Image 1: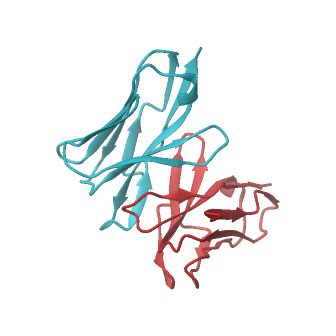
Image 2: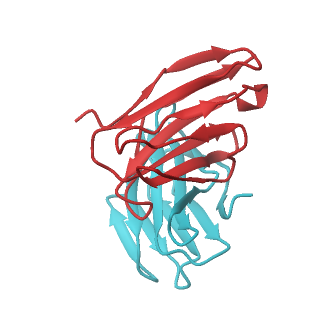
Length: 112
Length: 111
């Protein structure tokens, strides 16, 4: 099993550009989520999904879109990148929010 | 804002000293989870506590869940350099579907 994979590992964007961060898991987990990590702020929940076709907002959803068309994939879209979105992004999956979360290796995003 | 608060933000200890991080929630939690993130790495699950007043041990690590299920602590006895990293607590909110993390405690160990 590959576990949770994220691509790309690093990305530099200019303000206003859009992009999609990819996340995939091969553990047949229903629950998937996206977090951003900033110094002193810990992990903040952006969006989450409890199954294919179902998504909901987390603590900091503005500027991000998600969709969940399959159990395996949960992409995160930045609509119009801003410097405030410079961060490390982690995708996680689990059987539910009540169970152990498996994190991907992260994507380090810089917006200039 | 975050509904799961964690203190302290940083702790710098001498190797062999003990370390404790505390986690507090504004609402009752169905469970509390603890994670460790090594520098440059991703969070890795340590343990989950479910019952009121529960205490669990993993070698030098002791985890507690408060009686009211609103607070938790992680205590490390006789820290080692391998304990370096950030420790996070996390709790499911909104009827259990929204897993929210504390801001984390960064542990540095001087040898």
